[in-house]
Amino acid sequence: MGDAIFSFFATAAGVLVLVLLGAIIVSLFIGGLHSFLKFGARFLFSVDWDPVQNVYGAAVPVYGTIITAVLALILAVPLAFGIAFYLTELAPVWFRRPVGTAIELLAAVPSIIYGMWGFFVVVPFMATYVEPHFIDTFENVPVLNALFQGPPFGTGIATAALILAVMIIPFIAATMRDVFLTVPPVYKESAYGVGCTTWEVMRSIVIPYTRISVVGGIMLGLGRALGETMAVTFVIGNTNRITANLFGSGNTIASLVALEFGESEAGSLKLSSLLALGFILFVISFIVLTISRMLLKPKAAK
Amino acid sequence: MSATISSGPARNTSVAEQMSRSRHRANSIVKALCVLATVIGLAFLASILWTLLSLGFGGISLNVFTEITKAPGSNGGLLNAIIGSLIQTILGAAIGTPIGIMVGTYLSEYAVGTRLGNIVRFISDILLSAPSILIGLFVYQIMVLGYGYSGIAGAISLAIIVIPVVVRTTEDQLRLIPTALREAAVALGAPKWKSIVYICYRSALDGIATGILLAVARVAGETAPLLFTSLGNDNWSVNLGKPMSSLPLTIYKFAGSPNDDWVQLAWAGALLITFGVLALNIIARIVLRPRS
Image (cartoon, rainbow over all chains, first blue to last red; front, side):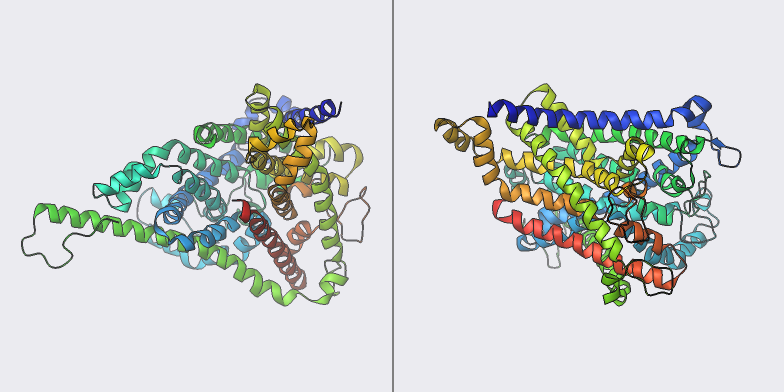
């Protein structure tokens, strides 16, 4: 009797998780339905976001979401790889735990703290040291001068990407470290035995062996970066336009929803459009996280 | 590490030695870059902690803990925000934890290798990494639209974030328990649920507690889901049916304001919440250490 009850509750809890995710998708879709019906497929491709005319489109925030997340990956992956390599092969054994813990603590710092740190520390730093330097250096270089244009306010896409990068480094580094540790020592020892250097062992043995899981870890970081809200909200500048200028302001789905939700009436087309954006963000995140999970699976299932 | 060949000045530099030297040079460069990457990573953490200490410490006074948020210039504090955060975090953990433990139990004890189990595990992992702002929008849709902004809506959105964190650690910890232990319980004639509750939970207690601590740490700093659910409240309110204040929301509001004393309070709040969250993480790691 007790067994039946207990197993019922356990199964019910499991099913509840499925129901929860289903309910999230359905509720966001229903919330955005008004907007989807009104604008149709144009909602996806329109660059308008005009509360005065009551015309809304998703193209700009979707672009901002993807560009900041991808830039964040470009910054974060080499650093995370370096950290994982250091923690698995180079650091003295007694030093690995404290350093690893410190890096993991970066993931524990709340998002809003990254926002404040970004706004009060990173933005002035970018405006004073980084952006003027880039703008001057690439002033006469075609293509690059379109990416790095003034004025150097410090806020904008590049700063948001930098902060996102710091936030996802611990996730990517931790995954890389864990999968690097799954390489059987005998493989590495054989390579050392024929005279390989540490870097050669990493490049020719460890990376090929863990390649798929490493990509999975990177996708996990991408999934995290896509939906990050508060940190981005503080520094992105919230402008609804698509620009190649990385020092220009922009927006992301999450930052737009966080900033404009309070100004939207219940039942309005604007609120519906924000919920529709939430639905789109969910779909993008779901796809990225599913890919990540599938890539990580073979090694994760011990 | 392999021994370096010919470190001194070589008189007859052979091709092999040149190649060896360039290989070792590449090795040294990569190693140096990895050390640099780690230093940069640690520097980010140091910069965040230093910023919080240098800007937040000056704002910590008795007023922070005894006064509620007030208009600029009237010596307000953060009492209502601190209490609101505690209520919503604890309530969220109290709702989410039992569900998370049951899901973890289901995955580890009942659904091993089954199709449904794999799907539940997969979906739970998606929820673990899903953007928290969407959880807020979801709770807005199902609760706030009908009943208005409330502390309970905030707590429920936090509970939804707690569940997958607890699921992950509970399942992992239960799986570490040797099968022999379960078999021993069954051999004594204990029903399955008794072996789970009295044997498995008891031996996995440290690990499950760690998961709960990590979940609390995760939601204590969550801001985005509360924006659309508990909304924030500048007055004293512990009524779960009304909008409720919380530290992250107050920090968000105050940090962006032009009033110096509000910004100062935001930093004080940021200091409190970050060190609280980091302390929970470190405690969780210490608790887990003997098992790992």
